[in-house]
Length: 76
Image 1: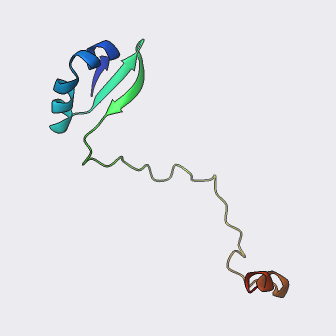
Image 2: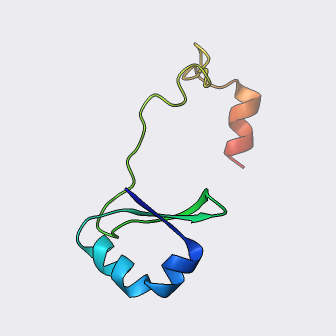
Image 3: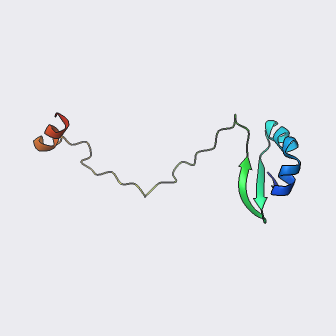
């Protein structure tokens, strides 16, 4: 992945877009820190599976029938 600063990105924007259209990714930096990323539209962001592992807990009775008073709230 190529990294360019903002000034270079403004100066050579059309060339950068052409590069991205050919499948490359461009990282744009400000003061050496990444602030934006140019990627082809056809390329979908990659999902990272398992990133929430251990952060979500499902109760053992999550699919248990509702109590009559709770169920009646839905039937109004």
